[in-house]
Image 1: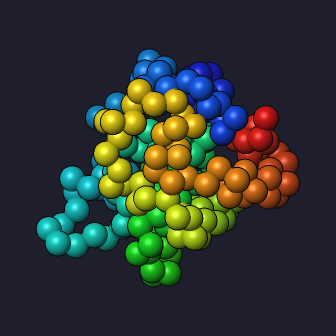
Image 2: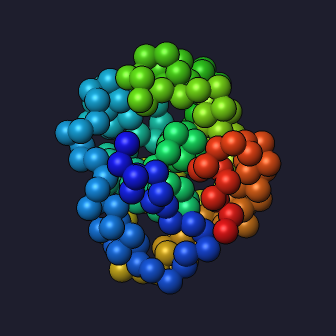
Length: 189
């Protein structure tokens, strides 16, 4: 794994940079849509949804997914992915316990090895689904991010209704739960 992938994230304390600047930095080394394994795209990309059926609520294309990483103050490691996917799904207010369990099964057992969730990642995912559900933010997969790109991160987070105090409170819990996890330890700087 590229060391930039391991180190990169936009903490909630980063407020003045624009969403565009952070995204442009990520694009310099991040994956392209074609680099994502087909199994992952099949589950997470809305272009593979069946007509009139959302198997997994909150599916996004890679660009939207990356912008959500930035707004949520998460990096690109496993627990970061689990949180971003879970929070995005939860923000739809439509995820059933069966849908959560089915996604967990795919992410834990059927995804390619480097994309699989371990037990801790699954717990972060499930916590994030609940947190997204209780949040008053907009459904993150439906946000038009284009007008937000030149806003500061603080303004963009406010525009979509993200409660940074709610995120910080959870990040403190995650940090205590997973003392050996680099992504959990760097959340609050």
